[in-house]
Length: 319
Image (spheres, rainbow, N blue to C red):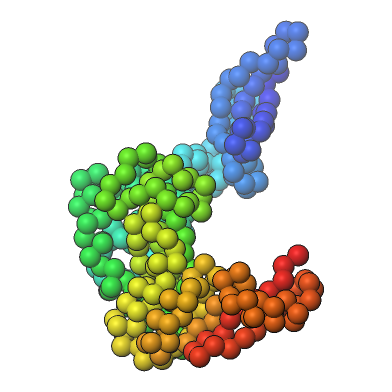
């Protein structure tokens, strides 16, 4: 008996097949129709399977008149799928951010595919071809990446203009933090160095990334450093570079305890910059530690705040 069978694949999709039950309960695969990702796709594949069965094994002496409406689902064959809507949507937002003014199609395409399916640079151009039929050679990619690195300041300008226009950004309050990005390699160079890795990849080369965002978390500026750079050493250079680039006279920066040191505080005060920094109690003077200890009194989820010349230190008891 010929029938339609659906089975779950390892990727948790549904395969639609035409099978035949033969002697002793054994099943023979006649034709694999396709694999569906949604219920609608599965039902469409079942309709195609019915058509195939009827063509091979007509069930009536007087079959219905052939349907010539090629727009009907049963007359269509699912061959492939893409992410056209995602590409159009992300392209529209890319333009809204103002990045289209950079006139760099490779940057746009790499950005979009990175959001849809993060992958290596080589795999990214393969995915662009697979999903959108957008073709780049490896040579074009490598040359294009060199051009993109020269667009850093223009990219940041676009981000800042967007933040000013839509997020009421005015540099009065910014947040700073650091992360690390490692490479799938064990060979270092002048910039990619092994160091303290936030991904637990201390034996692989990495770079250190300092990121400045607004109060909504929207990225404003980014700086990269050698992989063996102590994260606290990135704080002042990143902040001062932003100040000098945009001639900022006054703002408040928020950072975590890893950025705090007496040297940094003096540097910020010297440049008349205000700050809010989570303090490591052990780094403070003994009298200040005793004062904080009495205030917190070993009570969890409470905090102690003390003012300095240009900023605020916050200490907190954690569970």
